[in-house]
Image 1: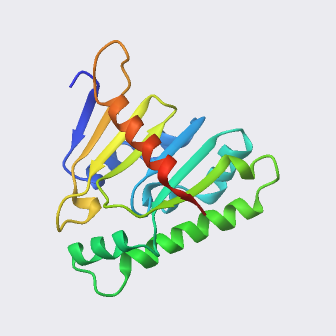
Image 2: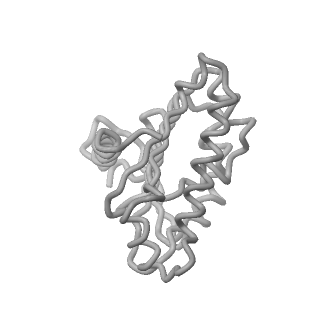
Length: 178
């Protein structure tokens, strides 16, 4: 646990301690993987994302595929019968696709959007290859109700940061661009 710096009982408790602006305002690289990536898409304004991208920040977003089987399985597990997660995820992808279309030719390639269709295990947010926010997806619980772990890279000791950095990288390599 040398690199676990904080544990929160829920995403709401985490968000109170770590607002999106604190996480992203000075970031040079953001890697996010999960279901619908609300912390980035709903919790951080478009104009701020644009400012980051225009200043050189690279943002890679990996969404659970709204057209895939895994999202339907997750909806069933959470008890949704009305495509709630599918709709939310598709909306967030559309929002970022629209933002990317409005960026200049230098900034647009820095916003990369991918989808994957696998059993969802974690929501991952890795900022500047130094900070990882990891949240497991629990059975029958909304993601917002799951515990959240803050992990800071400490290459001097064995820890969890390289594990979740590798999870993101391997998922990204198997994913498809949007």
